[in-house]
Image (cartoon, rainbow, N blue to C red; front, side, top):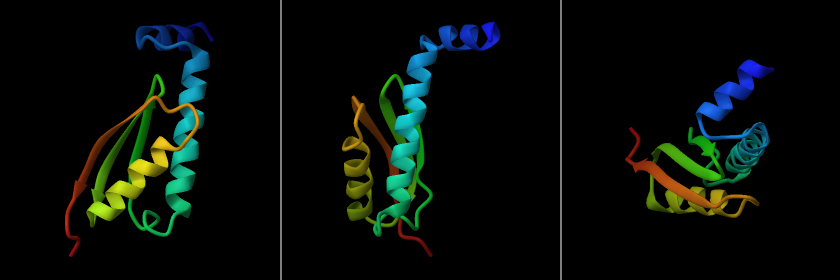
Amino acid sequence: MEEHSTAFAAQGQTIAQAIADGVITARIRARLRLDPLTADYEIHVETVRSVVHLSGFVESAQVRTQALRIARDVAGVRRVSDFLDVRKLD
């Protein structure tokens, strides 16, 4: 257990914060999969200290906006960083 505590401390996170970040990430992923606009896209979600980073490719600004809205609406999210790339898929 001490090894994990040291790893979290090196990242500036407590174990409790890492668990909270994991819960936020899981909730966002689930909501993205259930939403008709975002379900077909592989949107990567990472949460660090309650800041969510979304990345991946989507086909339209509408999908991007919806993904960002979903992430922002999850309890505990402080901020969402948008690294989504809008590209027409072939």
